Image (spheres, rainbow, N blue to C red):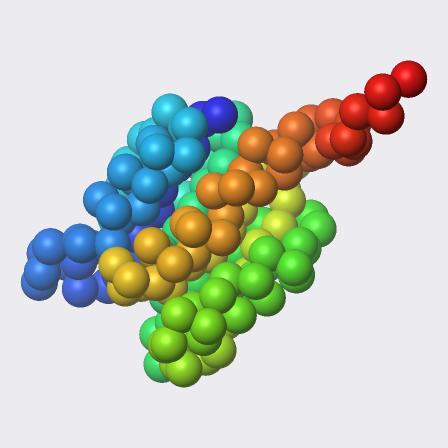
Length: 163
């Protein structure tokens, strides 16, 4: 599985501080069995949409973003992602928020991240904190291979019937 990690952060993109969540995301994607490019650090807003469209053109199986999912006026990653998605997968986003809340982070329910499919690429938005990335990848990693298989026309996994 080819993956791209994208960090959406105006300040990190401007060099105000170092991106911390992107490297964590890239490492967790590697641990999930992906060949990973990035993290690509871009300002939030239109540059996120451009990076997602470039990733689609490059044929990535999965693109995971970190950052830009909150409530501030500059948090636009979900809106930019929706411009690219063909089909949403609300269960992923719901599970990410629920897992964060269950891990004792009440503010996890404030994340507006979305997940879905564009072409043959799975796109998932994670929060911008390293903890949010860890919690999110704990949810995403176990279903990543199956999701990619399904997007590419694979059959559902069925238990062996013994017949």
